[in-house]
Amino acid sequence: MAAANLKRIPVALAQRGYEVVIGRGCRFHVGEELRRLGYGAGLKVLVVSNPIVFHHYGTRVMEALGAAGFTAGSLVVDAGETHKTPATVARIHDACWREHLERGSLILALGGGVVGDMAGFAAATWLRGIAVAQMPTTLLAMVDAAIGGKTGVNHPGGKNLIGAFHQPRLVLVDPDTLSTLPEREFQAGMAEVIKYGVIGDVDLFAKLEQAEDLGSATAVGPALLMELLCRSAAAKAAVVAADEQEGGRRAILNYGHTLGHALETLTGYNTYLHGEAVALGMHAMGWIASREGHWQEGEQQRQTRVLAKAGLPLRWPPLDPASVVACLNSDKKVRHGRVRFVAPRALGRVEIRDDISAERVGQALKALR
Figure 1 (cartoon, one colour):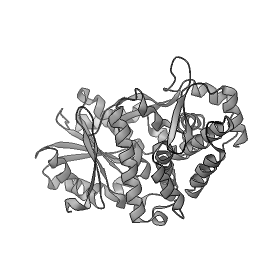
Figure 2: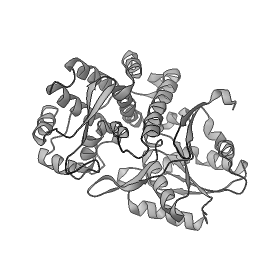
Figure 3: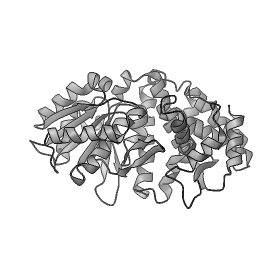
Figure 4: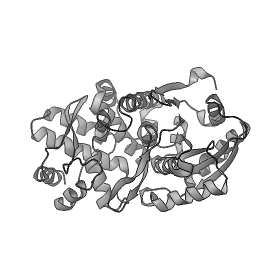
């Protein structure tokens, strides 16, 4: 593959920045990309994946690593948020022991955001931290989860309460892997793409509005898909570079996530995909902001239409508002006892607020049932 066929988006961190490399078929060149980073023959690599993804792509990835002179082992773990637990991370640790991974070794996450989060957390904690590379195979992971170094697992009290910041050495995005992604999973990933448009990229949002159908990779088409991948990755990279560990600006990436995480937790992680929950969170925050006069009703309607065009849910389940508020108060984004929400001000601009009342949240959830 010629270098000209690849898009390289830098994540410019103060220490050990890295690239998001995007291009069709680039999964076949993972060994070459790791070689570019200075890894030499004999490198021990543990590929962590899930059964479906490994069935489709695992053999060729392992062959590409072997062709580069690396010693590759593999571990297949169950996919889904219900398996995103310390117990699964312990299985990865056991595989690290079995494969004799050393401090100079590397874990390669091949899969969606759940695999990436767990593999990254295992890498952050094995031998007090070894390298990790991300090869996302879902749209959501390509544009969000694989970039930025957030790793971790869920706790019964809430989503992602256990984790660490551990930046990857490389993110390798092959759009061709979306050909085996279920349509519902693609639609869930579109929620994160729409999020980038609302929080800071009005041109991206305009392209989403102009598209006839956002519900599948086929409907989007290869040219627009490549642009969405690149623009979303660049948006995420810029925010992460400015605020690596979410001390300030990076919190805007949580638009839709505070309520979305509560929804996932209260429904046991087995009713809504992460992106679907984020879409419902965005819809609710838009409703609240428009009712309070912080953004125009017309812009709320534009967001709603784009979410619908992507096939995302717009109706909240009949959850008890008091349970939702209780879950919000255990969220990791709480500061000094106050829940911090990301709320829209205008397309391309959001703000962080801690003054949204429990009553207002309850009104939104009731109105959007």
